[in-house]
Length: 100
Image (cartoon, rainbow, N blue to C red; front, side, top):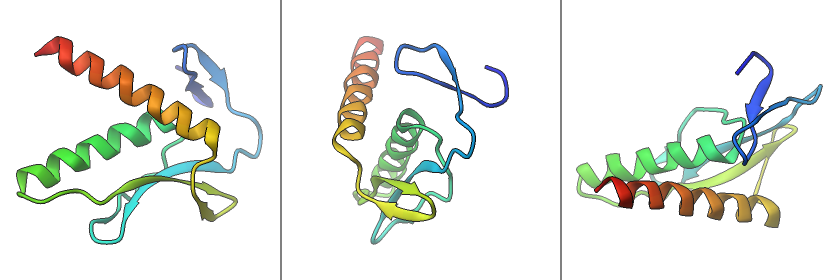
């Protein structure tokens, strides 16, 4: 992908719109935030899974969730974003199950 493009759900590259102000973070009250600005839910979910695995290795549970940041204000995910997050969970977990 070229600079200024992100992957759509179908895997094709799409152009970022000018003044793109929404990004996603993973954050929890105990484990804190990931310090990344994920441009889409797909990468935010990858970060979330990595934190789950890291917490598991430490013998604890991760309390992080995915949040959207829009114009510098954190917010819960909208319904279409929750649906996209669920989609990526199913796709990635299916891949992990086939690899075992």
